[in-house]
Length: 146
Image (cartoon, rainbow, N blue to C red):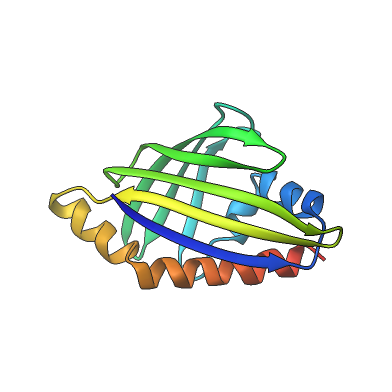
């Protein structure tokens, strides 16, 4: 099982950061161009809620279904229940540093499958690509949580 970790601070309260990430519509904001995010259905974030979307990696559609677990004020985990990865579990944590600063901790545990989709996910979710994705998400979170 591979892991990826990324942390950053946001000059905003834990509530502001949490509310931003609990709003399911921000998934599009947190998806960097030129990637296209097509949302099929997204339930309000809650224990067991399900999101269905397609991430377009150029002309290749990566259909994804995620179920949310361990939803609390301190964060949540989204687990791929159907999609291109053999497994994917992404935990988001929001730790109060002070009344106006929050640390965002991202932790992903994942496994690539075999065949065509394994090749695609190894390219699209390689460590440098994940670092670029989360650097963009850091920028957008700081921008929107003022």
